Length: 299
Image (cartoon, rainbow, N blue to C red; front, top):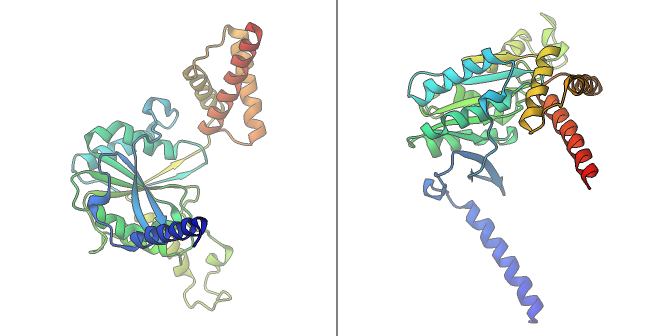
């Protein structure tokens, strides 16, 4: 056997051993519990907690024009961290309005007090019982964070999530809550056939009205359900101004301030919506262009 063939064989053996190791039962000792944030990773069909030692956090003061939603989520999270009764949380509504950022802000506020966040992809929700088993004996308080949830009622993740939210015997853990965001009110698609009334759809379901109840049932299992809405123009411009200043740039005079506001409104017209995310995108573009122009003039 040549040296190149030997190296190839050893590489194959190493890969085989790595895959075999992933199939072995994982213990809680394998998890790096020193982190405040985790992401559930799946390789070769097997999941594990990946520690994130430098997660992307969010400052609460940067979340503007959502004061009611912010206070409700903060209060619920503080109750949870303190070991008091608290609810699973569902945040629904317009894109880019701060739903996910609010969850990251909770970790920034309460991470030092024992709060931990585990982000789980929608496609991996069927691993939820396994995740709960990993953390149920820990002293920390865990938020299982599911971002942009949407699925069909037949998805295995849908059923696993219902089990956790219901607090069934095998899914309950007092140190675990689910925080989810969705652009859909009920996280599952709704069709005209859901409202057929008492006629029978093509699949000959005997009780079509129960389809609607099944779809709504999942969202109703969240004790705290908050809606987020597109921002009004004044709110959007306030967020733009704040974002620009946090990037280290202050308009030199009233004329430049009005130039910024006009450009920000044009930017949102091109994007078709007003949101905090759009405001952040505009601020980075506008400040970057201003600073680049200054740099070029100085050369």
